[in-house]
Image: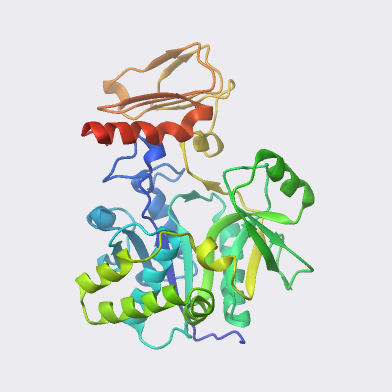
Length: 372
């Protein structure tokens, strides 16, 4: 399909995560996407919405989050219409979030979605170079219009990261853009690899980090669901009907019946006409405390220090004092450790075990503790 200048662009920011690996700063009603973890002083959610602003008007940007967070998101600095904050009935991974948003948008806009181009990004990514991001996203939107395919953004890997999925491309570029921004057909998606496989991916030059950003005509998204997962396509149709009928109970019932699965696994790995925009901007998926090392400045000993803690003879540590002058925080002789202090909680964990912070949250939840 040729590019259609009359296409209506809508943006979706997925912001439903609980951010448990950022405890104790991240809490149930104030997860990481509502924290100022970026460099701008804004919350991560506000940064994500602002990132879309050059290409999608704020009045057509939607945030999908869990229902418990709707009020907090509306009261945040995201600066979008209150009606554009959508609460999921429950957690159903990225497939559920994007299906629910497609149903919401179709119910509001009408038609089959052939004139709607949806751009979906996550609220927990840090991307300092907005100009480079805008260039890549602009190409992705044009590709979704011209080729009527499913488009994602892949980044040239800078290290053998085992915490990210990868995308493999094949053949010459379909389109060339300015700088490092080019469009390729996707050969395959790969789940998070072992260290050895990640090193092979980086050496090959044919694999890219999967950013989890997507652009497509809503009509093509629906048609590919019909081909690959007709059960999910039927659920989308039924959800749209329930939303149009303002039947929240029925929409909840349908959504709760969805499989809890990622959009990559449910659709992208099996879809036809999948494209990837290759880009090279700095990007960080903020999953746990060590991510701050790549987003904040470190001292000469490799320490990231926030809130003016005292660090003596420490190396490669992250010390985050969220309380400020009311609590003095001192660490001595530590290496490779994360220390976080808030009003009502303290965390100390080796950096290489930062993924286990959610186990603390689980234990506190079982105890009925209020600090989660």
